Amino acid sequence: MSKSKIIFDKFAKLFEQGLLTYKDLSSEIINILKSRRDEIIFRLKLTSQEETEILQKRLDQLEKKIDNLQKKKTKIKKARKS
Image (cartoon, rainbow, N blue to C red; front, top):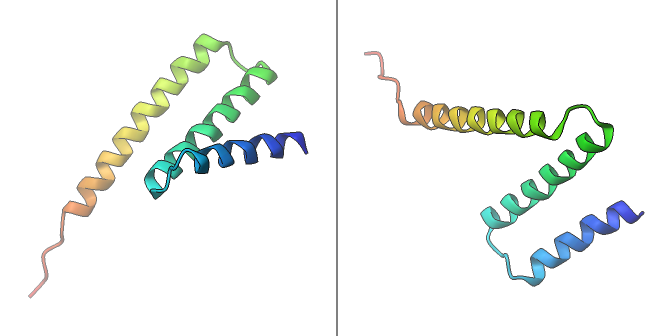
């Protein structure tokens, strides 16, 4: 119950601050979920903090590359066959 209350409190704060656009709201939700994920990893002591930071940087770089590839894919249009 207390964990869900924390999440609802964070959502309430977002609405109080006036974050009305979808992009702002989605980025805040992603940040909240990432922080919760990091807390769980640290509690389980799966990796050290330094290793986790290095892996996080690698993941961020890969996500950027994927986004760039997806943007390029949408820009490229296939020619019609006559």
